[in-house]
Length: 263
Image (cartoon, rainbow, N blue to C red; front, side, top):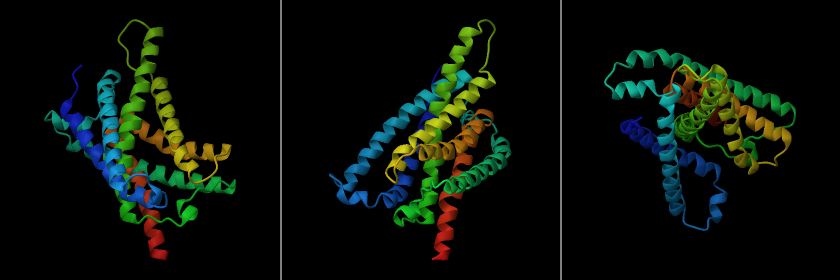
């Protein structure tokens, strides 16, 4: 099966944009750590851009190669590149994508509030009076919507579906099959859990890891991951990207605006 190189290039350029867009937010959050860098900041940032570009090139290549084998993909971009009419489909997924993204953001905030009753509170603004402005949160939302969806959905979830589908076909030989629902759901949940685990190093820099802190990190990040995974499965990766971006607006932009208006 041939790789769609035009789609590969589009996603790689988008991922590089996402990397650059996240820098202002990241530099604000890690401001104290940057004061003791062993190398100049521009050297560090250049290295991160190169390293991440290689990482995303690999993830996109594998993701696109395996997606078609398991019935996943990017219907909007693929259709557009093939010259098909895609506006109507894009309009049809906007509502559910944005709506579920807002729901994910609200659920994460609500669950975080519940965890606070158990004494588990990790708030960057409380950890060091760090309040990235809304514009930085807005730019960082592109990283979540583009880069994290490429890594967690296009690469990780697709790879898991492909592996589980291979196992499914081994035990159910015969007629041509497609991944069973349980196979896809298992991949959705595992990718969401891995997304939460991937945030533990960041949390570790803010507080001591305890069982409750670990559970909080996995649950809060997993909620969005499950929603975005379902959208990727049912509507395409673009839908998951739109939804993730919308959730990050709720999490990183709205609170910043509220804080700015109360100061």
